[in-house]
Image 1 (cartoon, rainbow, N blue to C red):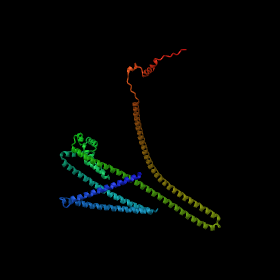
Image 2: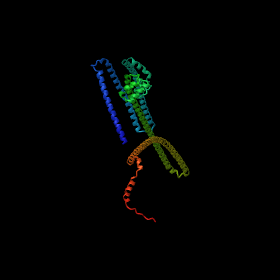
Image 3: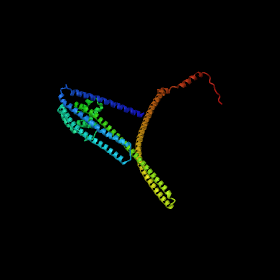
Image 4: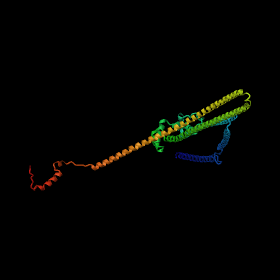
Amino acid sequence: MKASWKIKGERAKKVEFIRTAEKLKAQLANMEKDKTGHLYSRKSDFRVEYRLLEELEHSMTVSRKMEKAKILQQLSKIQNNVKRLQQQLKDVKPTPEFVGKIKEMMEEIENAINAFKEEQRQIYQQLLKEEKAVINELSVFERKVELWALGSSTAEKVQRLPSARVTVDKTLGNHLPEEVIEFEKFLQRTGGRQGGWDDYDHQNFLKIRTKYRGRLSYMDEALEYLSGRTKEDIEQHDKWYQEYVILHERKKESIKRWKEKQQQEKERNLKEKMKSEKMLKERWLQHEEAQKQKAEEERKRKQARVEVWKKHKVVAFAIDQPSQLKLEEKMQQKERQSHVKLLLERNTLQKKVKEKLEKLENGKREETEKVGRKKIAAEEISKFQEHDLHELELRVLQKHAKEIEKQEKEKRLAKLREKVEIRVTRDRARLNRPSKGWEDRRQEMAPAAGEPLLRVSQR
């Protein structure tokens, strides 16, 4: 279920990426069309001035196509050499000539790759230098335009900006991601991470903007807090901050992609290492098999020579039996010695191969166990966290249920008290009056007053 959910998520991301790419492609085509229509139109008033741009663009397009074709040709040559090397490795022969040929092919491929990388590195360095020069020229022109547009008061602020600028580290030649370079250039161009403002004004601006969640209704309160800033300054700083947030998010995403790429490179290197270890193991097994075959052939040859020798000696056995027996014992002793020597050599070779294989397997097992332990630890930690969270939720629910039960009990007791409670008013005269029972008794005794009293004799 989880795997299917991941697959669906990846498919959705792919569809979204393709959709965005198609949208950007359409926008690029529209922009190219507008540029061609406005700048290079024959009816345009600036046709003579823009003809130079048209010729420059055409020459750059041709040079890019030629460079692309050259790069594709070099890559195709390297690919063909790699395929040829793979074909050779399919039929491995344990001979010095074959090993020398493979080594020569690998050196040729490595030299071609290094030459290609060095050439591309020099080209990229030159392009980065040219890009830096163009960016500096554009920043100078932008400052001039800003000075013309904002007047003398704004010109003084712009001249003070270089003191707060963040210098870009000398990393343009270190193959940084484009988003990181763009973000650093933006900071360099606009006055650092506070947009040319001091820390106090910038922090107050962020506090008010966060309070109103970026809505324009925060302008009045911002003017009250930022007494030294005008409305135009705050609006310009707000635009700068929005662009700053966008470029900063792009920078973080670029760094995240770079880390993922490094992880993939690490996994690929690990796979190549395992593949090389497997090839080494196969070569050792082939070498051991070849040694076994060689020893078996040597044993068969010696056995054949012994059989021939026995046949020759059977004839001379009757002539010289004592000498024959001695010679036979010597031959047998030599044969045993040679056989023991072969066994020792084979056992030594097997022991070396076994030790190397065990070393490789132990290293692989330790690495697998380490990965497994990390995975089990992560799973156990997540289980404990889920268990603690479940226990906490259960305790909160039990406490809440007890409080509700206590409130219900108090409500029931209050209702019972209201039903049972008896309210009696005080009457001080009641102490002097006879009780109801006494009055009833007097009424019962009144009719019997006229009858004669019966006397009971006393004994």
